[in-house]
Length: 347
Image (cartoon, rainbow, N blue to C red; front, side, top):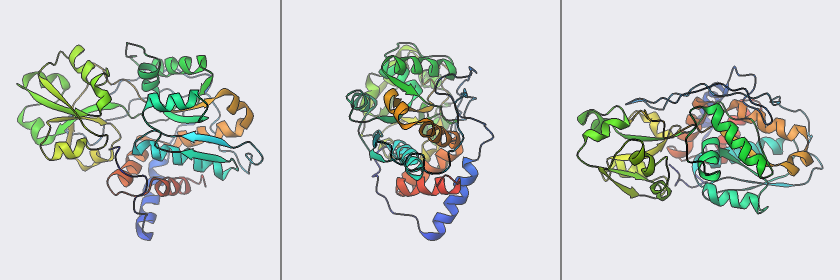
């Protein structure tokens, strides 16, 4: 899903109206807040996905106590310019646009550096001072950046560990989103039916299969390592493919299974079966803005509140709809983000 260009065709007038209506409905949430930058409520969650599901169901996730009320006026006027980064796939392009556009609408000067690279690359950019903040996934912070060998058993524990790691290095984790975009494993419905596959465990019944994903999955617990250690699967061959091309490889019959993200727009087609992760190797992946402490202090409370207000709107339905617009319909992430923010009265 990650290979689409940031610049796609823009929305036509009718399509824009239709998308805005859809995104307004998707963005509606009964949550009073989406998370917390300093203290979070602990509610356990369990991830679930099923064979043939269009997108994995979102478990309950921890909500924080931070202020998520949208500031009015132009509180950012006169504040120093900041640099926001995003990673190297389409959902991150959307997140970067959503957060930066909302901040600019409130007078903040935001320079968005997009498509910086993987989590380790963008984290290095943050630590070196090249960027001041970026959106990251809590499970990635916990396992990839902090290097914990275990996988937390709840979203709350994942958030707690991610927050501790970032605080130690001089950064603040703001409110987590209602949605989470976890890793997963999928195949075609026909392959799943032919081999009676409903869970990842069921792959042990297949004599051999191929598994495609980004190159880094070769060494990640959420990829090859977890499939071998947790599931005892040694009957597959890993095929590294460029980010975003795994669905094409699967559709063309070049591979049998692929690494996916549970908010991929492609899953909305109903063509794929997401196998249930009974061992919990994929963990929990809410999105949080990670901000340098000094920048947060410098920009003032309205800066944090604006970011939290955006996060609060990001439900699973909203993110899947926006991902589909970018990944499948090849619309410009900036335009999709703009329509979403306008539909939700953020611009």
